[in-house]
Length: 118
Length: 110
Image 1 (tube, rainbow over the protein chains, first blue to last red):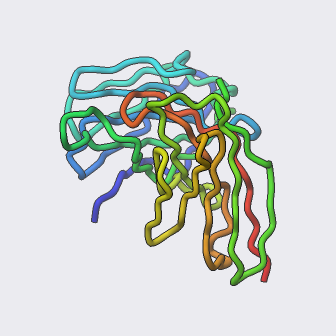
Image 2 (cartoon, each protein chain N blue to C red):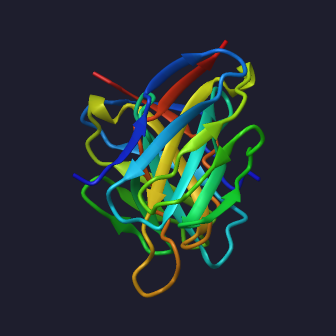
């Protein structure tokens, strides 16, 4: 089954304790990205990656790191989490368009990771 | 920047058509209209997209006005499982920007 898998789904942690949220997709998509969702603010993009070893900042990258060493994995790293990073996080991937037009607009999302930082 | 305007909430009776409007008066010629939905706090799900012609798939229909300044997503026979937040997004077919906004919260009523 084609899917984007995130882990953990739920996590409660404390300020300053480094954590990593993993994301893996089995669809051979080049493009992957991370979003956070907060009440009243919708989904905001944190980082995205257009291929292995290629990453770029989204709208709200502060306090986050990412890496893309393999095509299927795109972990989100919080080096020193703070309470304002309490949020619902989504990983997404999308395919390259046939015909060489670039990445399509059809995003495939994971089920989300709810993170609470105390 | 918000490129679309959607009503914050709507109700629809089960079995009836749900018509969700979206205004995108500043849409440019190379921008498509995409619709996604998010059920409870699950990951958003792609529904449909279009450029200027009306589109239909197994989930929904998309009606885009001739001047492309607005569109309507139609769920022909709404069920309780269609209760979700629906996002209208305007973007180039390719590119990296996805602005989801806050969408329309649709409640299907039994």
